[in-house]
Amino acid sequence: MPKEYAEKTRPVHEVKVGFVKAVVWPNATKNGTRYSVTLTRLYKDGENWKSTASFNPRDLADVVRASVAAELWLREHTKAGEAAA
Image (cartoon, rainbow, N blue to C red; front, side):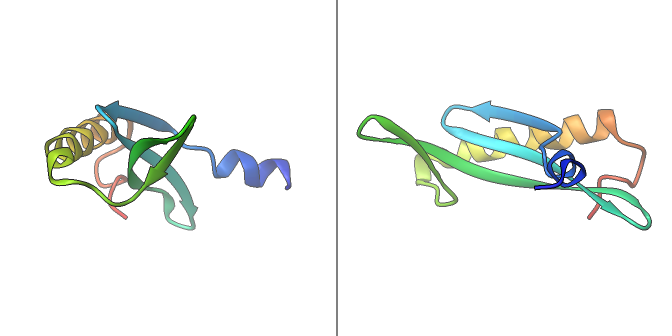
């Protein structure tokens, strides 16, 4: 994989709340950098940690907290309007 591709695809921020993780990804466009956020739930399968995009009802409060934390980070670290995809 070319070095510049690997650098562009690295997350710029991660936050974990309980077993929920929000990851902020940059996306270079002709109009500047835009950002997206992925949310996953971590779980243990035997000895291995895995992740899923499916959430249990008890995870939903942590989904909200992780989402808010990601939004606050974006507001603090990007120019106004830059965080919108």
